[in-house]
Image (cartoon, rainbow, N blue to C red; front, side, top):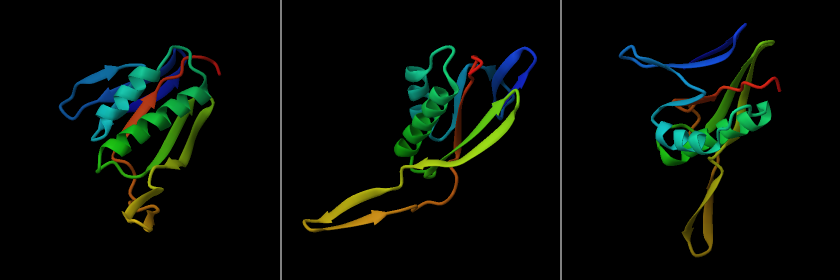
Length: 129
């Protein structure tokens, strides 16, 4: 994915290994992208606030993580605006789960996978917020 802001506004592109590209208001690529894109399609609206766009991206990445074993465990965001870029690491994780083993015992798996998610999602925010 390629994103940025210029004098005409914000832009988001996907570039595929075979050379094709798309310019869309939201995108998802990689192994968890099917679940992520369904969340983006359901939640995206024009002129989203920055906060609502970030929450949508977090939800879509979590959907991909939950439905794809190869997609890592944490959510990192990169926010690109006309004033700069900020990296928001470890926004949330879905690896805080408790599994029931037998009637009176359980084990908590905290950060079982430490590698980054191997797919990405993005939402273009067109409003000035």
